[in-house]
Amino acid sequence: MSIRVGSYLAWKEMWRNRGRFFLVSLVIALITLLVIFLAGLAEGLGAGNKEYLSKLGGELVLYQDRADLTVSSSQLGRSIMNKVRRTEGVADAGPIGTSAALISFEGALEPESVSLIGVEPGHPGEVSVVEGEQLSNIRAKEAIIGRNVALRTGLGVGDTLVVESTQGTVDELYPLKVVGVSDGQQYFLQPSVIVPLFTWDRIRPKGFVSDSGGELTFNVVNVAVENPLRAEEVARQLEADIKNIEVVDRVTAYENAPGYTEQQSTLNTQRGFTLLIGILVVGGFFQIQTLQKVGQVGMLKALGAPNFLVAISATIQIVTTNVLGVIMGALATFGLAAAMPSGIPIIFNGNEVAIALVTLLIIGPLGGLVSIRYLTRVEPLAALGLGG
Image (cartoon, rainbow, N blue to C red; front, side, top):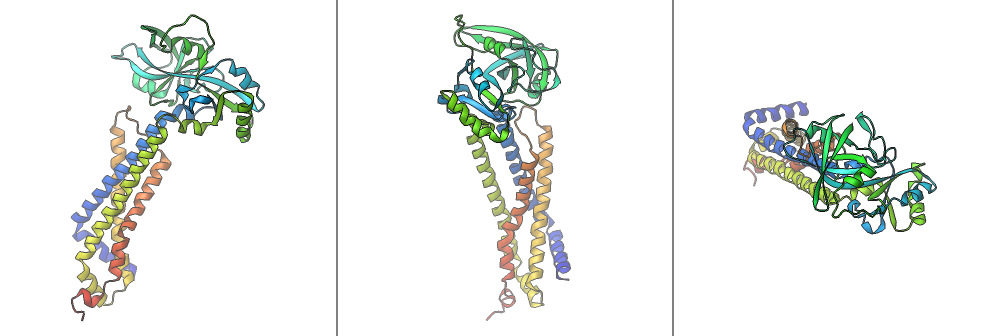
């Protein structure tokens, strides 16, 4: 009976003051929109830095030991590959070279910036295609483009792209045939074009052009181990057998991508402060509501209403207002996301969105706890001004 009566009183008051409650729901909707967008932005910016590295086929990534786990600073020679592949426990290994580049194509108004990644076909580091074919050999004039490149440029299998590269002081053009399209493969906040390693070494931008025929160098090595459970043991063995290297797991590799940790920490801090603001907003509103109806609550208690009924009524108002705001905010977020250009780095991860929504549904009751406690402590005579 108390629950039924409490529900009736709660809905009656909300309907009578529907404008006021709706405005609070709108504030909660804006907070919801901000929290979910920050979650999507954190995921999108994180993917822009780590996507290629996080999808590597091997379990380990091998760096030059003085590179401080920075891919661009690591320089390894091709001669190291035989040593890596002969190490006990290693199933296969593939070199990876990275650089920035510009690409143009038929109908392009201006060049597109991309990450140019060199890999050895058939070895770890090469991406799997969702359309077309894999790279044919290590010297082929071919490219696999990431999904983001395909979306931005309209290129597809069979088309030709042109890599614009500065060789010394001269700008050179290198046409490549698109043989495959992969899923998202962003690296260093740029969509990726994957090419054979020798082709990458020939066309990547260089400060000077050398004809000395020196050893081919690249940045890191992706290592696949025979037994993933023994990955740490294999990493130690590699560091013991090969001088001047550092070996880490794939997660450590992408977490050390330039700016990744700082980005995520900043955005998570902003999300935390936004949730705190939500608690204060909801709590402040219902505290004001409570102070305005002390006399009414005192009258109810004087007529015999128990604290449980008062608490149920206040809780229903808090939860309903909060749920309505969260639903409106979620719908507004996904509506805006659908209308945004594809270049904006926002990715909605199901788990992250679910956690954000659950957290937002919890902050309402948390913010209203003070007002519920205050209502249950109201003394009828004092509230009606009849206390001695």
